[in-house]
Image 1 (cartoon, each protein chain N blue to C red):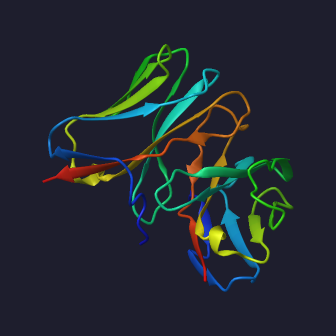
Image 2: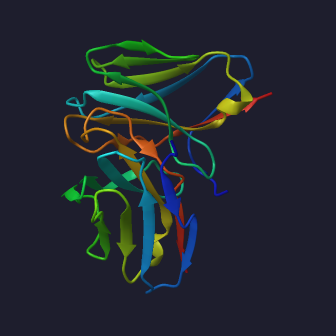
Length: 115
Length: 111
């Protein structure tokens, strides 16, 4: 079937605007992850869902970042009052099993640029 | 698409040669390791994984070696092709902890 999809692929926001990034995981995958990837760096963990439950949000950099997965499938990462340091690629990944010790399938990412 | 890893360590190899990409990890409790390939404008793509009860695993043209004593992981690519040009990341975790990614290495294949 289809892989992980993300939208939009590119987003330009003015500082202070709110943005919402969408992730459609592979159908049936129970685990969903959000990562932030700065230019020249590896992805850094933001948050993790098992079905609709957000089990780990330790990587969210501030309370301006909020993620949800209300029906256990599609997830949205929301960033309020965006700042320039939020500029990065936001990656979503899904997995068929629990968080540890298995392959995660990544989407193409959303590149956010905050002006 | 956007560039990935403008300032990463770079490994340049001739087409047809073997490539070895290295990764050091810090968490001695990590028990799962994975290599991802990331091309410009795309998300990371799975290459191969290995668990801590193994020290070597082979795939198609790729081999991963794990040395737990020195906390070192390597990816070997046989007969490197231009399509192998990308940024390669190692990642690790243990139990139910999130994947922790390394800084990445850019592989450049010279035709």
